[in-house]
Image (cartoon, rainbow over all chains, first blue to last red; front, side, top):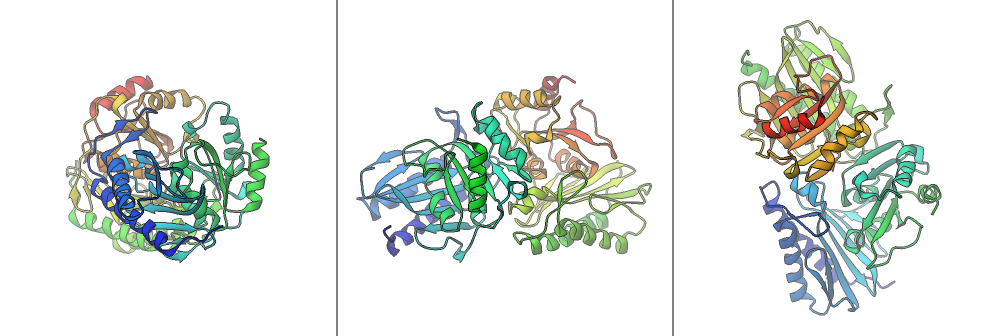
Length: 258
Length: 258
């Protein structure tokens, strides 16, 4: 796998700086909330944060492609493509809960080689780069050992994520885990990387929801696949399983039984 | 209703300072997690934070009563009784999510006349005192107008809170609301007071889970009752409904239909 040039790592940090400045202006202000075609909420903060990132990309790396949640796709056949979710967890953002995140991924020939999970209110930035240890604000982090589901802390954003046919599979993990917590969006995966959550199961994730998670998790020693145990592919809506411990990941895949 | 003496308001703040100092020492460290008799988690941070509060109460107001989640009850017949949950949201605490809170209530002849919701990692303190506007870090706050459920943002900590017979009532509100968010414990009520969440429904709350919420919510213009619309009583396990807008509260009570 190609190493990521230092100037692109630095650029990724500047992208997160730019989006964070926009988001902080709007946090806990009475922003208007619009409904998108899939009924999910969007605000001026989502739109302007992504625009700030795209503006910087257009001036700094005009040959790169961009895939963003709010403003669509450009030049996806480029060798380098940035995949952006300006606010993952817009419902947390509009309710004033600082556990949403800005997701920034860099794909090289379709593979995520860099990922950022940025929490601009708390000033927390998880950075994963292929071949390097994942860092939180510059300090290397690791997921924790937890091989058994009955010892695991399990997280999902909402039970409403799951289709009716998926609900029994979700319940198998929730009922088998020691504790289940709700409501964290990308922040749950960041906490897997940091060793405070053991397992996350979610459904219906678009490329911009999961691409940045892969380098962050893998660089922390954690596992991330779809529910069948395969690497998810860019462009597909995916069901994601993430685990801090490889043995727990295998046990969870066995329990899902797909 | 008796006004709360300034020295007791100041003491309440010092109690939260003391518990916060303990909690910050343990946040995002690998604390052991024990299971209580009801299977809920408890850590050294819960126990030591409550002990710090009780130690200060014993030296400052030895004649007052104390009811705490972790260390039991003393002198509950006193005119003044402090009701303490050192960490409301222990699952958020152990997963590294800074959306738990320390709850401190002062009862005067059985009525909550002062409440604090303190988030010691973020440095956020909501203070409600009978007859005064609720403040967040000293600045007065108000809940927001939102009369209609289909415009409301609805929050509950977990669907697993509800008994089987309660689940259809929870679903009526969740299905009728514009958005539903999960996972905030007491922090959701603080965000009702601040005007970013409109409605919270929860079940199985002990006195130490809800007593502090009452002055915080009422001093912000919000409503808080049990599911029948009555004022909850100290000592009872209660089902709580909180709303930022009185018309929404009536509409939610009507939908519950109890």
